[in-house]
Length: 476
Image 1 (cartoon, rainbow, N blue to C red):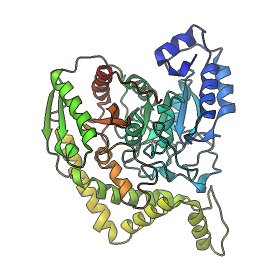
Image 2 (cartoon, rainbow, N blue to C red):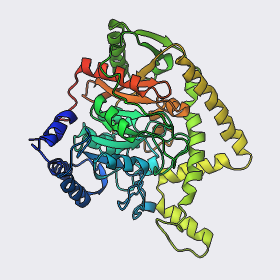
Image 3 (cartoon, rainbow, N blue to C red):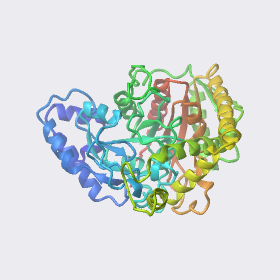
Image 4 (cartoon, rainbow, N blue to C red):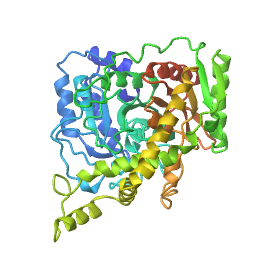
């Protein structure tokens, strides 16, 4: 019996009735990993996972997530479990504490099976910048899975485990979720504590859930969200994200930005989104096409702000405190050798651009100006919610593409996130939901954007669409 293919309510009942034990789920997950050729994981947690599963056998099953395996993106700190950020500079780093989200999933008695492969320091959108080799798309092993939460998306899509955590700075949960045909949510900035997330761009980063379906996603967000004294940007809002699931959607007013349906969008992707729009109109929803000024500036804004913040955040990796250390003739020489060997090509490029952006007068010329444009873009997006409940459009301009396609051009991979970046700039919540396939049987994602702290409304619409479509998302 393949227990991990069952829905979580059925698994939960079987655990309560002692028909199965947590160890059965853990063993099944590791059996699937052994047969996996996707390079989803950097570090496995097999010994501890088995130990934890056996411990749970004598405990009361007290929540839906009890005993379920989960994979963790390798930029989220896990005590005594190697955390590398997919970089040589941290390939022997063993943290001494747990990130807040890890404490929360342990409180729910979930079982961590391993740390997932990713773009190095979350810099990339293909899964190809990892020091540990590229991650493959489960639908077609010659294609990228998207990034940077590549391993998390790939392992959920291939049914190695039902849950994974990712992080999203410019689309790093939603873009691979779209390419791999799963549900990925970037919560409102501050909804989930960033304490223990290795920072890329602190004003944009957010941890979020990646799952096979909408209900599971809401349940996992319930578990990981909440205020945290270690993260002063976290917010005290306690709610059940499943509460609107199943409620009538006919009164929803939905906006579709014209920019999201422009000539940039692949015809088959656009056709699938148009099908959803027709479905919603037939259900009684109001759907209007609107203009949102400044969306077209998303890429340069992201490059200036995220790379500026990255160069500052990654300065801590100096070869002295922890991680890789290479001796040099002087302190400067040691820094140079350690960072030259420790960081990959893409990370070094982004650090150098970010350092330039923040140097001297450039800080005023680029970074501060970008912050002003970000404010205007944010206001423009937030103002949409004065008249509409949600915004929808495609998650990506196209479906997954061949490995190596964009490795020759530093700008190309940024354009994978052209539709997702504005959400991070504004700090809004957004989901990628699978809505169909192209003619090559590759998944297509719908982007659903909500107002601040209105994740429940996103789940309401997403679950209706998911139920209506009733797609078969099992990778053959």
